[in-house]
Amino acid sequence: MLRKTSSLMIICVLFSLMFIVFSSPVVVAQEVEVYKIGFVNHLTGDLALYGESKRNGIELGVEKINAAGGINGIPVKVIYEDDRGEAAGAVTAAKKLINSDNVPAIIGSGASSSTLAMLPLAKEANTLIISPASTHPSLREYTETYFGMMPTDEVQGRYLANFAVDQGIDNVALMVINNDYGLGNLDTFSEYFEGNIVESEVFNSGRTDYRSELLKIRSKNPEAIFLIAYAKEGGIILKQAREMGIEVPIYGDATLSTEAVIDTAGEGSRNFYALVPGDPESVEYKEFSASFQEEYGTEPTIWSDFAYDAFMLIAEGIRQEGYSADEIRSYLKNVEGYRGVSGIKTFDEAGIVTAAYSFYAVEDGKFVYWDWDAE
Image 1 (cartoon, rainbow, N blue to C red):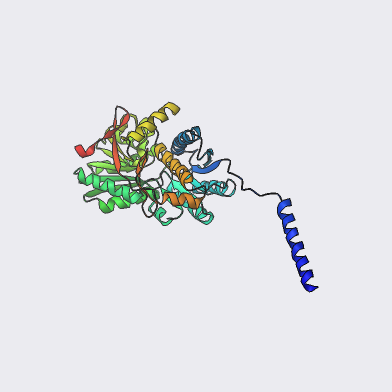
Image 2 (spheres, rainbow, N blue to C red):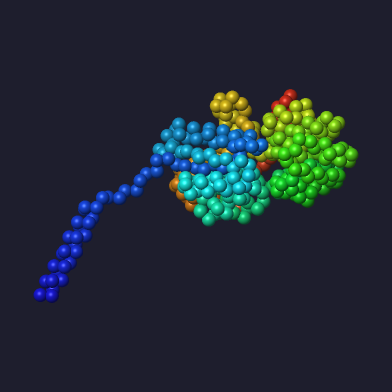
């Protein structure tokens, strides 16, 4: 009797399980309708020209991918957020993108201070940040969270110092913006330059008169001036330097390789040279430039090519690996020799690209490639 009862109970349990399985709705994983990628940058304020430039470059990539059917048949969308050029604004934007939009990766920001402010939040949420332009050396500490499309400041500062030596310049003056970016380049240049730094001037942004610093520099008669600044201040400094009779060559950092500097400086941009990372002479860049001009009616603006490549690398990570931070990270860690429009990209062990630089000179009111090695 006990055996019959046990058998009956087992049969009842089996029928119950079958009823549950066949009467319950089948749960099917929903396919993602759109791949979302975040963007945090300066879209308003004094630095808006940099953020708008990056957004324009990214939009070219979005249009190209979606016109070809998306990523594995799924469209991609970039959600643009404004950090207003402030670290606090960047954190607010990143929280929104992570918590509300659930993006696996964020392209941002231009300023290292904004990117660094977002990184602890991104690390905790396991969200990737890939920046087209941030360059502070401490970004190397976020090896699992951060990828940088440009070398860090110590690389640029060393390049500028070595360039000065190669050009036979013995006495230089330095004029740098008073933030982590400017001071980092100042320290590295000072470490590697083998000649004499006759004057170092550190200035605050937002001013319209830099004649006091330029007077000190003029009194020391340097052979050249190395300028680390943003576009607005850089253009003013060039203009005022020439008005004061300072005619020595002025060499600028990568942030000054924009037509906005020439527009502000006018005739003051004569004998001015700006550092350009990447390879604007490559076939890839020229094709990008043609598309950019067709879309926006102007040549590519500063860092639009780097932002385009940042977006395309994230998109390729999704295509090859999947739509999660871990999968995109897996792809990016193995990027080597990627031929982007901003140059060949290989990430080092810290997730920062190794790259070469070029110099561009101002001729007839335009930046043109300067083959200084040939001189």
